[in-house]
Length: 79
Image (cartoon, rainbow, N blue to C red; front, side, top):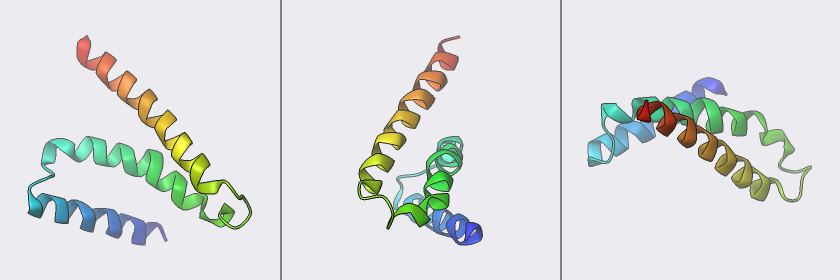
C-alpha cells in the first residue's frame, strides 16, 4: 500500500511538473505533505466506515498540521 501511495504521489508530481506547476524547489514541501498528511491519511483509511465525520475530521487535522508547519518553516526563514 505504501509503495502504491509513493507511486501515486510521484505520478502526480510528474504530471504537475509536465504542466509547469511544480519544480524542484517544491520537493521539500511535497515530502512534508507525504509524510505529514498523506501517510497519516493512508494509515487511517480503515476508520472511514467506523467514524461518521471521518473526512471532516481529516480536513480539520490537515489544516492544523499545515498551520503548524507553515509557522515553523516561515519562522526558520526569518532567522
